[in-house]
Amino acid sequence: MELRSFQQAIATIGWAVTAPLFDAATIAELRASIGPLVHAGRGGARNLLDEPRITALAAHPTLRHLATAILGDSCFAVRALFFDKTPDANWKVVWHQDLTITTQRRADVAGYGPWTDKAGVPHVQPPTVVLEHMLALRLHLDPCTIDNGPVRVLDGTHRLGRLAPEAVERLRAEQPESVCLADEGAVLAFRPLLLHASSPA
Image (cartoon, rainbow, N blue to C red):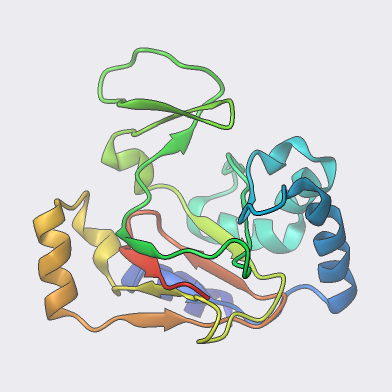
């Protein structure tokens, strides 16, 4: 995907999938480095920016190129997660927006709340304007097909602000969903406010 097409897709529909950006050897190395961090029966791992290999990946020029094209040169990674749907850890994700961010510490600031704690890290719901200036990048460590619980989205809903539950139900009834399939080594990028869900693998 050309960079201009990538930018246009993020602006208009709120998401884009690239061609594979990392070769098989790099992906295999990432799988090997992340695997030991996942506890048995868990569908992933949190706080991966504590791992030097993942911190380096977050600053990799290929990913930075995508991020800065949308957010500008001053952007930076704030969180890294790993998801892996397996027979021992399989789940459904209901339609939602990503409304929570990680912080270094808790502080009482107007417009920020409620606060929660996930794996020892404080999280908070910020004002909508903060979420509107964020971007999620999901690097696929294996092919994401129709059979293994791909992300499903409602195009353009990232432009509607924070949605009440009744608005989510109305949009689901009115608008067809798009399925975000991706090859190994490809990146799915999307705005946090984009309505998205996924089925079990």
